[in-house]
Amino acid sequence: MSLWTHLEAEAATLGKASRPFAVNGLSIDTRTLQEGDLFVALKGDHRDGHDFLRAAFEAKAGAALVSHAPEDVKALLTVGHTLRGLEDLGRAARARSHAKIMAVTGSAGKTTTKEILRLACNALGLTHASAASHNNHWGVPLSLASMPTHAEYGIFEIGMNHFGEIRNLVSLVRPHLALVTTVAPAHLEFFGSCDAIADAKSEIFEGLTTGGVALIPSDNPYTQRLKARARQAQVSRIATFGADGDAKLLDFSPEGQGMRVKADIMGVAVDCYVGAPGVHIAQNVVGALAAVSLLEGNVLNAASALRNFAALKGRGARFSVGAIQVIDESYNANPASMAAALALLGSCAGRKVAVLGDMLEMGEGGIIHHAGLADPIQANKVDLVFASGTQMKALWEVLPPHLRGAWAETSAALVPQLIADIRAGDTVLVKGSNGARMSVIIEALRKGA
Image (tube, rainbow, N blue to C red; front, side, top):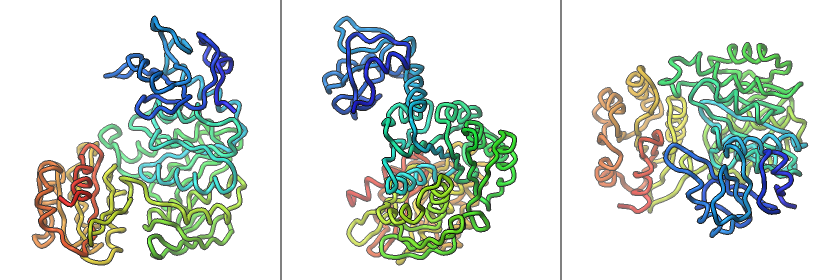
């Protein structure tokens, strides 16, 4: 069964097809385009997808969504504006779907929770979820437009760094359940306070369908504010997860490469193995299973699927270099996710080495937040700290001398000293915002050089 025929796509977008077509998927990138995909020629600040139409058809695209047609016409769907056309396809996909729809946002743990939900729900029925971190103004409609008509569950990650972004995106998704993983200092440069961040995250409640449920962490400093915003959005069902929530994490303990999680999910006792460790992942598991329960899924069957969960690249994935263990948290960072990663490092055996890069978009209080990492570093008995970036210099300056490995202005400049100092038996955590380029250190560790 095709995802979109030319007639369905014309009706959704009010566009005009140059010839009949049927496509199996969507793509906005010729490098990852699959045979039979509809290539969407989006125009960005630096690139215009129309310049890549030839490459798209050389990669065997089934058709292309364009705003103007080139001379060598192939199977094209011409619309007034390609991003609007993509949004139209997303709306139409949502309108024709009978799936149970979930939307996930939060200051940390969005992608991990979305992937936990993907596994859990796939044990119950055909599940479609956002790819990678496709959570912005093009990623959300792309994910929606890619949802098969026969999907039974749809899971969509929604991100933001300005007011109004979630409001616009959730109006496309129209979820039956909206999950906020946490509210914590992130993007403070754009919001100024965590109250403002909570307000921006709470926009997700405004798109809930009638009778939909807001799922909120019970033990967050902004829980009551989130509840109040949900009530303002006329949400009649509000549920919580956390230490004193409707769904509770009772215990977790390391087991093999993962952990054993015990929880009470809306009155259902759960004892399951999860394929990656960490209290933050355990909390995400409880939130995800609460979502399953609230949408009347079989919690125990969903929980049993989590044995196959693995931490994601840049979000806790592990690998070995000889006798050195590496935890790759290089994708992103804020104070909350830093604290969670340091707690995970603290549970590891051997010498504990933290390699930390700048937490970006922290605003005027950035220096204070960086220096504040000294507390979780010492609380989790980290043995040695390497730091890179101008803001991380604030942490370096308050660390006791015996914890100082090295500081450098860039991640690349830090590599030689790090490689020289680590030794067999070490566990090395690498974490920082994506813009801090901590992936350079990950690649250097992989090469052992």
